[in-house]
Length: 335
Image (cartoon, rainbow, N blue to C red; front, side):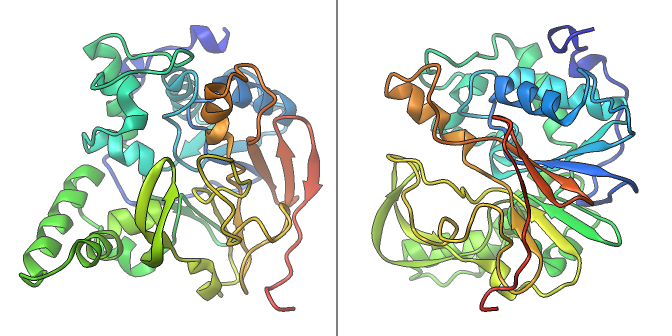
């Protein structure tokens, strides 16, 4: 069986009821950063890591996908089907990113026109062609947890927060939790709240938003990121992370991509293989999601700016889709 022959999600076994936090399996793991629909990069990376098309590894390793499976790339549906098949076979786990959350919450964005059909789709991007395919994607994504952990390591898409995770215990699903907390926040805002104050409250006080896209603050001046003018900027929450357990996350592009995510110095100044902050926090999003911009500039088949990476545990080694490998260096900031 090849990846193209993988069963659809609708044919998969029934999954567990939603839980925001789930336990990582014991043994050796390979954490994979944000994929963003880049199926070719994923297949190449999995081959370099030694996995077959169903996620089986001859040494019993397992995969952990850090969210943002969809949007921007060539074939988000193929990525979802590939990851879902591996999970159903017991060879992988995955958690939810902010793009996955947008989909299950029904939020129409410029990046998910391929799924909802509410706008133009890039020439290189596969569409979901019918309601069955859309249900397939959404049924899978809405079951993803927000965080994973075990005694030595934690994983989240954007930001780990124990208080937020506790606040989500017992919620029926991520979309429902998002809306419930949003309504509470809206009701608590003062009548004269400005747009930035309101935006920051909805971001920082909603546990689902905080975990999947991280804390923000008011920017000193408007700036452009992701093709949009923004008044809020991301906060490096990892500067306060001091837990001895390693924290693996994605979301924050470590390679600047011209025209999308300019170099703000928050993540690009540290070497690509170094942890961040005082604790062992490691971001492994190397901007493969920016390949759509390269294609929009006529580079349909490369060269590409961003890369897809995996962090091998317990080896603490980075493996990239282009074959480069490098050790992860943990040296607390300021040391």
